[in-house]
Length: 239
Image (tube, rainbow, N blue to C red):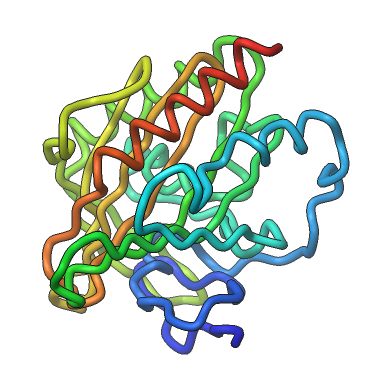
């Protein structure tokens, strides 16, 4: 079954991922995107990056559904007010200020908790950058989170306001850098909150946008972050 977003939360919605259940809040930080399959989907760099994405075989109790089109992962560019908050919106944009070389991703569902309501659903984007740029991305994102408690975006004549809050990472930090925060649309209550976790390994990053099935406070299991970092590091060692 294909899920199609029926509601546009925060800055919009993405195209459908082929999975039977998807919490609408996964559309929190991206706008509607166009396009189809990546034009570089067959390149060696893209194939290498795809192999570095976490799979269901890597961590227990995971279901991983690879994206088949870029529009399932990222959305159109959104200008923020104030401009200092732009790195937050750029994290899920097809046209960020600091462009990616290649990227891929998947929908990651974690059913390790006994409580079915505690099931988490994460949209993951794994990207590689030119030398030194991934560090710039994390540095600018960290600065934005520290100095940007809220921001506005206007889309199709409608202005939405989002709040941003730095939070502690579950199980500590991983990789060369990690930024963890929540993005909230106050108008939507509990269903308008997403946890965002971004880790860097060398010139690659992995970003997770996570919600719980019951809309309570989400967390990303440390085993997922740790294994994804291990796979990115192993891929870098083969370069």
